[in-house]
Length: 219
Image: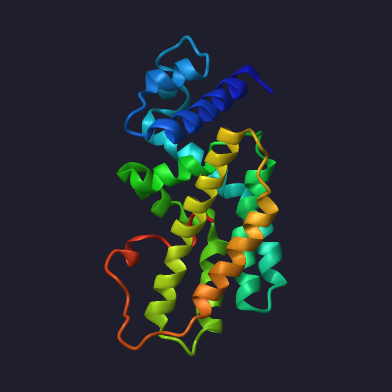
């Protein structure tokens, strides 16, 4: 790996860890550089053209490798559960492949609640086209249910998967035990498929705020 590539990766790793631990707004670019062992306190600006570029690189690093596995799994899917597994399992498999303890899931939770990062996530849909296609497949399979409710439930997937995986990640670091990401993926896929397929109470509708989150974008 070239020195510049190594420095860039070190900055991404440090930012992901520090943002996960303390929140994105609470960590300065200088702290990121120090966390990466870089003596140039302007390293984030040098390598990423500033905070927005750094966040975009972190999001791209997460989303891009998921696309191939998602496409392959969704091509074999013949059910709602198969569709949901196509979204969830590549996410948990990616977490399993990271050096442990990881910070990725906790960073993504922080990104959901940071205005700049959340905006970048919404703008990054083109990096994850299969997520949208799979979500539409789920909605089509559940055509007998109210479409707005189904879409609202689909949007809950981001919250359910990201927060659950963040909790597992934090527990793993605290206890020093390796998480069973395969079991986590199976559990989440079964639970979400059940939620999506559940009957709709006539008066339920879709709660305010649910539609503010992108469907399956983080998975």
